[in-house]
Image (cartoon, helix red, strand yellow):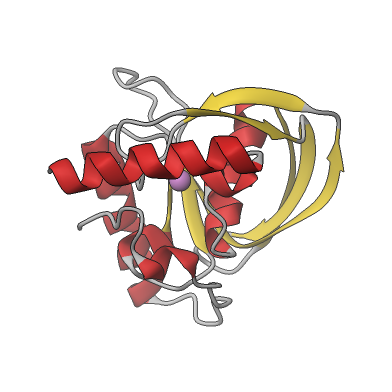
Length: 166
Ligand code: CO
């Protein structure tokens, strides 16, 4: 599946809640996983594939690890946020740019799995950053939107240059 890149307007939409935990959802999740591994990313949200649904996946295990474990988040809600962390982030929708983004260090998130079962987890460090980055995609918020104004201006300009050069 093709990953949408900035400035595709579909990346700015607010995604809808999943109500059916059916075969169609499972197929979307499997295709997202294949696409993420194929692209070498550690996270991918459904809106990046043009699906306006509240679904994202994360896998922080290293590329060569045999214990690849993808975490699937459906209808996630971040319920508690504390501390601050700055991390150099990338995004599959912004090929070849990275930006230092300030986020919460520790979060709690409630979400459903592919069968609709409710879960809750605490995350910190990179896992916390990845969840916040992917969760933003569900609200049409891109990582560059978290930058101060002047940095955002240059990051978007740089991203557009990369796009037009392709
Ligand atoms: Co992203």
